[in-house]
Length: 332
Image (cartoon, rainbow, N blue to C red; front, side, top):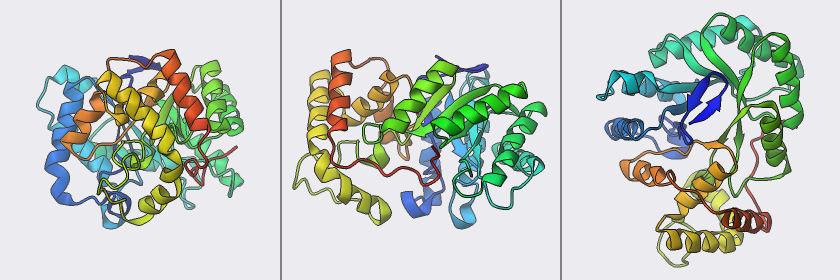
């Protein structure tokens, strides 16, 4: 288990961005039965960290991810002890109309209602407004303090905060006697630039847990695309497909190295990608929309890449002509 402030979380969690997102992930309500099976499988396999957000779910399905997570947890057929051990981390969007700490407390209460919970394990800021509305930033920070002081969250965290801004909020929260337990960052073999590595080092120095989101690079590191040309697998539609066409041609040497390591170990390319994140000291949160994906992801646990393999993968990733586009809200 990994220590996140007062919490002990599994070395890998599950991200639920796709649960309710039609635009990017093609969610349909008919998927819910299998999604519950996914939830039951990963919980019974020892995964206890689930990441969601109050903005997950497109259009009329806004908040759907939290609703499903709350429903699945309430209906989990396993033991109550395992159920009580589940840690839910939700993120609160910095919408332009959220200008006071009270509005963030209200958002937290709404999330708790959708999740059917009395308290969140981690309440997180989804992003910083420092790049475009710096005057709103203090309301975000005070919102975290208020959530914590009112007992609505066991711990607080941030997402998409860069090295400098993270140190600022850490200092501010410490002055208010609120420990910063976690920081989410887009992190993978396709997203390991200087800012990410600086964040890892800062978090290690300050005792902040790091949650790696998009550890599979939106699917580019699953091994399904870009290794064997002519394999008949079409790129996904929409913005993901556009990104795949820009990045994957230059990523073939990395993917081939990952395939070589996976074959030698009896693993998959996706499992190698997630395990690399674990070896970097992060807790990755890959998503899963199907039982097949969930079973595959679980295979990233229970073993570790060697130091030489980690270094070789990092070197190959550094040589990529093009890497993942960073989140537009990522701060310095």
